[in-house]
Amino acid sequence: MSVSERYRQAWESYWRETSDVPGDAIWDVDPSLGAAPHLDLLAPHADTSLPIVDLGCGNGTQTRYLAARFGRTLGVDLSQAAVEHARRADPAGAAEYRRLSLTDTAAVADLARRLDDANVYMRAVIHQSDAADRRPVAEAVATLLGRRGRGFVAELTEESKAVLAKLAGSPGGPPPKLRRVLDHGLRPADAADKEVPEVLAEAGLEILADGPTALAQTEQWPDGSRVELPARWFVVSRA
Image (cartoon, rainbow, N blue to C red):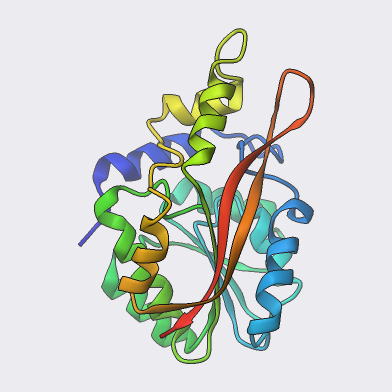
């Protein structure tokens, strides 16, 4: 099974038209607002001597933070343009980066064999995947975890759709960073709230801990406050 060509091209064109300036992508927040608090939730459950894989790494901002706290760190993304952004932003090579479709089960299995058991970090990938791809994405997490790995998964909730609609309805229309997401045909907050835990369970994952959170964005409301999207986090292992 492979990801739809429409979806792959949408991400490829999005990242090709994104600059190397930090924060140019709406979700490209400083790790103090992303991976740092997420690792605080994952750490009590995880063996940090294992490698960690950042699934949907984008331009690698969070990946580089993870690399300072884990031994071997690998960022993977569907988009080759995103992988090239990540490599340019990491001249010291703190982490490795490669293109990978999470629905390519053979490629995921090959990576799992190379890494052995690994931890996984995945922020906001299931909710904007095509519906048919959501379970294969969750299965990729399970494959990479193996027996000893633990995963951190954060996904937007349905409530965030209303927040995005409000933002899109700002005076003057959607602000530039959100407009680019919409113009490229990307669909944030597309999964129902009950679907995410169901998909994780169907993929053979056990939820060890979970709770509500908000995913900070680099866009602002007209009053200058930061846009935050309602989300839920899960720490998972193989069942």
